[in-house]
Length: 68
Image (tube, rainbow, N blue to C red; front, side, top):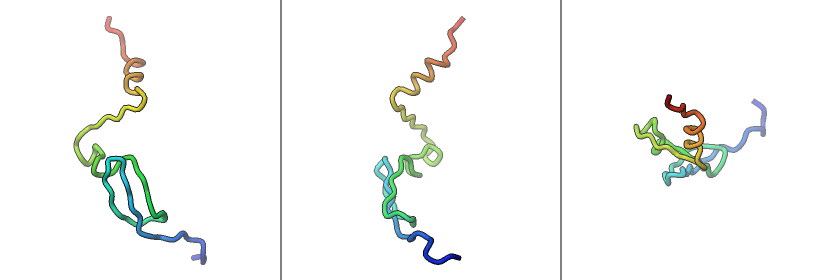
C-alpha cells in the first residue's frame, strides 16, 4: 500500500432527521442522514409517506385515469 494517501479513520456521530443518533466509524467526524434503521419502513414495518412539495398529488393527478 502507498504511504500517506489514506484518509484518517475515526469515530463518527451519525444524526438522523428523526432525531436518532449513534456512533460508528467513518472518515468524517459527523454524518447527517435523512433515514436510519429506526425510521426506515423496511425495518419498522410501517409505511411513512413523506410528501415534499406535493409530489404525490402531482403524480396521482398526472397518471390518474378518468373513469369511463
